Each structure stands twice: as structure tokens, then as C-alpha cells.
Length: 185
Length: 388
Image (cartoon, rainbow over all chains, first blue to last red; front, side, top):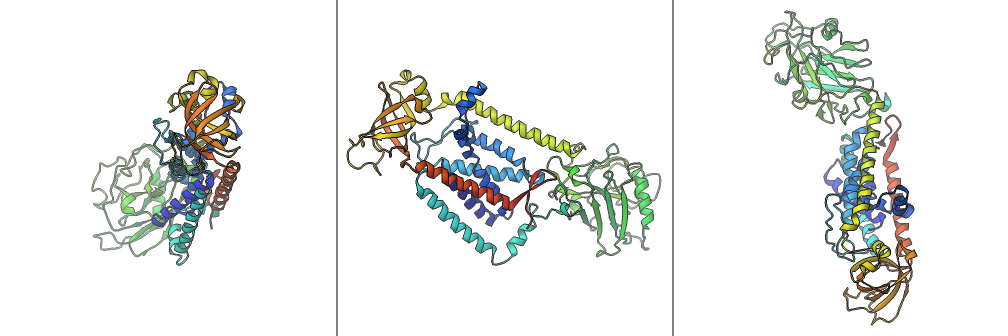
């Protein structure tokens, strides 16, 4: 899979651009989506805790790879979304899911020796989508492209929000950014 | 409005006489945290509906003349308050306040109702918080006409405060004593003495009242269910992935080498040594193909280093010692794989540390950005948007 920074930047780019079109996608939700981009990378927990160790301990077959599939992302996003305040959970879930799916898409584009990506639709199907074989993660050019794109989007976003306070004011009308009046009571 | 928000203000334009929806149901009271505001509508007197202890309902009246009336009729606050108390008929608790704030002319067109729940968190159940600051009465309000005992008591309009812009499901409880006046608008529809269905979207039952602990308990339970499902996926995948793999992998080779000899396998392997007996400088950029390369690598299977070295022949590309290659090839009897295709996953020795370092930067970026945008609300134990 692409490195985590590339994943995060890709989601940043996509969601920030989406925020230009949809006011509900505020910076807070872009950040949540960036967190969602990390969900498929949780499969690397296997570095810390080898699945074979878990297998031996539990006596059942075990593998972390579902974390890098649609089913795993959906479940992890659900758990994480529960950590949010009640009013935010569904939207947090959506942002996390968007980030995770984006990461899966990105991962599906890298070079596979078999020409086929992983079973990303697990547990719905074991079908492995064909990969366009665009890159290997270790290629620094991948991160270079991600950084450059993110920088462009960052600058464009700042330019959009700076000239007038209009956009910022508009977003505060949304349910998300509404001040929590309960704090003052 | 979220968990701890305290005040809901509902403003209702008094222009239309037709926001009638539903019937009054006598059997149900309101649940804590739900808001039912009986508002003055079309020049009728306000009633009130208590939510529960500790809830204040503030009602502002507009005293316009009734249509068709030549004399402006003005309700005295005391009368209304008395009526509200009487009308609620035991449902009014000590915590209920019906306060009239005389607003004789809010443009002459608005009945203003403010509802102040003492603890909005009690609403917490399934995402329906009290959100709306202003709710269009024509959308949300349900006009209830009910006439009882010939008393000339006001019509009660029940206004459903919304959550996140939606009508919160609710049903209004006993309405005995809250009666309508004689205006035709009051009785224009619905069987009398029966309940109000506040909205077309209010068919589901009210959430059960309970302490916030219940909510947290359900939250925890749901989290456990999701985590258990995830664990189930881990186990299921571990049990079935092998049979769905495109080719046998390292684990199969390690556990049953001989049974896979002659098959096409895929392995991820760490390069230990590379031979120089390959043609040309195909290490970089040669087109993938089976005949292009002739390099030989001695590799160890990733995660199965204890299996010992393997030889990869016929590779069209190699990696530096310490790098990682993925190999698709035919398993030969003598711990050898004849490569059909090689992908250099980590071409350089530093490739893997590079990936982890960059990923750590990514993780740090997410954490920092998240902490800047979100905070933990100690009251709800949930993330909330950081103000300012």
C-alpha cells in the first residue's frame, strides 16, 4: 500500500476540493476523512503483533488483512465514529468511510506481481480487481506527487477562504460548526 | 443542537391555518428531553406540555384579534398559565413553567415559543438531538383542535421541535383540559378527543427515557458488537483466505513445499545476494517479461525467514540486498523459483525504513490536525468540534 502520508494527503486533496463544492465538508471533516485514510493501513499492526502469534494464542485462524478491505474499513469506521459526539456520528462515519475507501482505491493502483489487487470487496466477494500497476510505494515520486498536489490544494483553499469571510461565515451556519451552547449553560 | 445545548427557540409564523397533522393521542406522555410546545396559533391561547421535571417552557403570545372578531381578545397570562396547568391535567410537574412574555406585536404574525430543557442529554438516543433554532411552523406544527365540555379554552397547537432539521418523533399525551375555542379552524378536521399524530414521520415510538448511562451503555454495546464483527472477519479471513488466493504463497511453500512443486506461486522475499549473470542493464526499466532477465537472487521469504534461503532464477530485475521483491514464478524442486515476473517492492535497502518513516509523518499529521479541530467533551465522552 501506499505510505500513510500519501494516503492522508490524497484524502486531504479530495475532501478539501469537495468542500469547495459542498459547504458541509468543513475542515473538521476533512481531518476526520484523513483519519479514515489510515484505517486500511492498520493492517500493519501485524508488525507489532504477528497474526501467527494470535493464531497460536487463540487457537483459531487469524489474519489482519480484512482491515484493508471494504468490510474491515466499514467496521473500524463504525467503531471510531462511536467515539464522536452523538450528533456527529453519522457524518464522522461517512468521512471515515470516504477516507478509507480512497485509500483502498489508491492501493489498488499500485503494482501487483499478479496484476490483480487485493480482495478489497471482502467479505462481499473475493474478487480482486485488476490493477493498473501505476506505482510502487517505495518510489519517492509517489509522495512527491502527493505533496505537490496537496500544496496546490492547500494554497487554493486558502485563497478561497481568505478574500471574504463569507465562506467561513456560511460554514458556521452548519449544524457541525454551530457553537455548543450547552457549554454556556 | 447537541447534547448539552440548553435552549430551543421555536418561532412560528402565524400565517397559515392549515398545518394540521395528525390526531391527539391521550395515552402517551412525553419523554424526557422531547419537546412539545403548545403554541398559540391563529390567535388562540397557548397550552403547554411539560417534558418532565426541570423543563421550562416559555411561551410568548401574540394577542392579535381573532379572525372575524371585531374586538381584540387578549389573553391574560394568568389565565393561560392556569389553563396550561389545568389542561395538562397532572402531567404538569413542578418543574413546568409556563411563562408568558408578552409579545404583542412581533410583526403581528408570530407566536414565539421557547423551550428550555434542563438536560438536553436526556434526548440522546439515536441521533435526534434538538437542533432547530427556528422551526417553520408550517412544516412542523400540528394544529390540534379539541373541544371539551363547552369550555371556552384555547386551541392547542403542538409544535414539534426538530432535530437536525427533522421533526422529532413524538406523541402528545393526555390532552384533557386543554380545549379549543370555537373557532372553526380548531375543529376543521380529525376526530375530536383523539390524539395528534404530530407528523407524518412520527410513527416510531418515542425513545425510552433513561439516564445518560443507558445511552453510554448502548454506545459501548454497539462498539463491542462492531469490534466482535471485526474479529469475526479476522478469523474468517484467516480460515478462508488461503482457498481464495490466486496462487499458493509463502506460507504454503513453507508448510508443504513438495506438494506445490511445479505450481505457479507468489512470494514476497527479501533479497540477500544477487548474481551478476544477467544480460545487460535491465535492472532498471526493462519491460516485464519472462525472457528479458537472467538474474539470480538468493532470497528469504518475508515473515518466514526461518525457512531458509531460496533461489530465484530468471529474474528480469533485482533489488539491492536487503530490498524486497515480489516474485511470481514456478516452484522448482530444489528450493528454487523460476521467475515469471518480479516486482521490486523495496528496491533499495532504505526503501522500507523510508516507507515507515513517511507513514509515521502521516500519522503524526493526522493526529495533530485532529487535535486542532476536535476536542473531547467530558460530558458526553465524545469528540466535539473545537470552537474557534
